[in-house]
Image 1 (cartoon, rainbow, N blue to C red):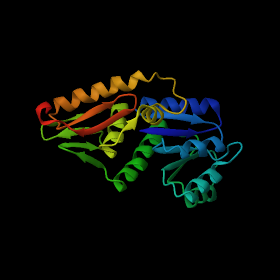
Image 2 (image 1 turned 180 degrees about the vertical axis):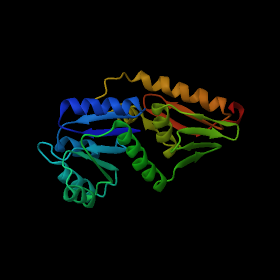
Image 3 (image 1 turned 90 degrees about the vertical axis):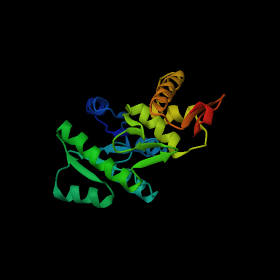
Image 4 (image 1 turned 120 degrees about the vertical axis):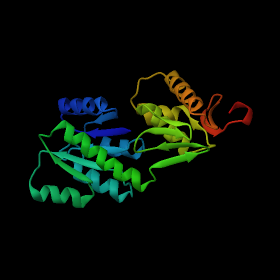
Length: 228
């Protein structure tokens, strides 16, 4: 799961990134409202942590524009503005949750889990193809032979593939969605994670396979019977 942190205080933004990464999330950081809008538009994020008092475009205006664009990405406001009127305005403008600063890191992560769990349940918490099921709430990949809990990036790759069976997901799209717009990771890391997933599918006796499309990307399809 990938989180966008929109916070103009550099030290706090860095701390938030570390908090989420320690909890097995991926996180990117922006420091103003204009960049927040552009990153959200990319469709690469599962939730947003948003400060209200940011330069160029304040957080309240970010929320209004995101919701006006019919984007229902979960947004948690994290703000030093703690008056009831501010909280009510933030929630009424379209935020899913509101936490005052200072905050407890454990509570923040728990609220993000709860917020994204609600989002997942409304979008169908399980993806199925062949005899394979991916539970988006528990990160578990399963068949009738058992189940394996996937690591974060393994889960994200498998989720993208199972949401689009038979369609090629380009390597560039995987890199952008999972490692982020500013990622410095080399492209061959995708192949490493695909290898992990193939081994796990084999261990589970899956009747689907991840196929490499030369110079393009990857797709999930039914395995040939001789190879199951």
